[in-house]
Each structure stands twice: as C-alpha cells, then as structure tokens.
Image 1 (tube, rainbow, N blue to C red):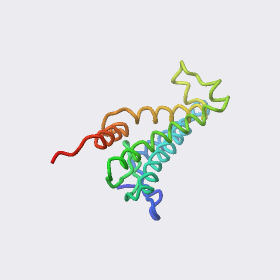
Image 2: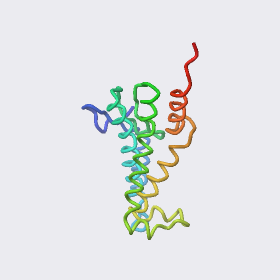
Image 3: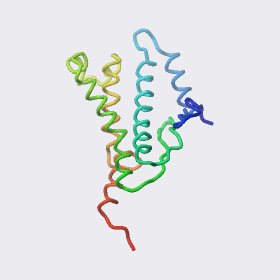
Image 4: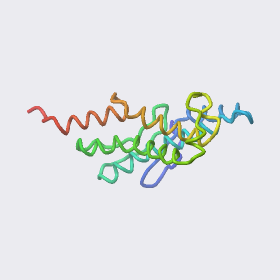
Amino acid sequence: MWIPLIPAGPLRVYLDPVIAILFAYLAYHSTPEHELWVPATILVVSVLLHELAHAVAAKSLGLAVSGIYLHLVPFAYVERGQPKDELRVALAGPLLNLAIAGGLYAFPQVREGFPWTEPAAWFDDPWHAAFAINALMGVFNLIPALPADGGRALRAGLMTKLKPAT
C-alpha cells in the first residue's frame, strides 16, 4: 500500500509506508546535537527532485509517466521509448543532482568549510548535507550497472550505436 503524497494531477507521487516509518523513527530519535530528521528530509527532497527530473524529461519527450514511487529503491514509472529518449531520461536525474551539488559548492560556506576527511561530519550542517547527498546521488547513479541510471544510460547508448538483430 502506497501513501499518496500527490494523488492527482499530471504527475502522481507515492511514498512507501516503510520510508514514512523510518522518517518518523529518525525524527523521534533526534537530539539537539544530532537532528537526524534534517539530513533525512534533505535526502527525501533530493530523491524526489531526482525522480521528478526523470519524469519531466520523459514528459518533454512525449513519454507517459504513471507516477513517482518513493521506495527504498525509488523510481519514476516511465514508458520505454526510443534509445536516444531513454538515454536523456536516464541521465536527467543524476545530472540534476550534480547541478544542485555544483550550485551549492559555489557558496563559500559549503566550499571552504566542507569536512572532506570526516564523512560522519558531512551531515552535521544542512548545507554540507545537501551538497554531500546530491553529489553522492549524482555520482552513484552514474555507475554503469543496472538498475542504476548509469546502467540504463549505457544500455540506451549501446542501443543507439548497435543495429537490432534481424
């Protein structure tokens, strides 16, 4: 059973109840020193933006999008299209995350104060958390392995270069 976040309109968004329970758990166990709900919120928003980028790219190419599902492995359910269209749709999410990370990196408080050698400290500051989450999402999703976006992009890229068997 999915929790409808945006149940109507041109693009429907659904949340897995497990994510809602995990979010509630983090919010309950937050302390003033470690506000766990802040990076959790940034992660959910970043994932939603990532999936929205896929959906917007698909719709701009005339492909049907039945919805966005925020699950442990989130996805936008998009109709398959021509390989060149699938390539654009696959790259839209990671490129948006990398653009967000790049935009955040332009701010001195992120660039100059980021604790590069202390990954546990990346999430202590909301700006650092937003940068780290989006940079990691962008890079991780470009790994050329299915079902990651990089694997989908590689498959689509190969399909544009290879002739189908007859």
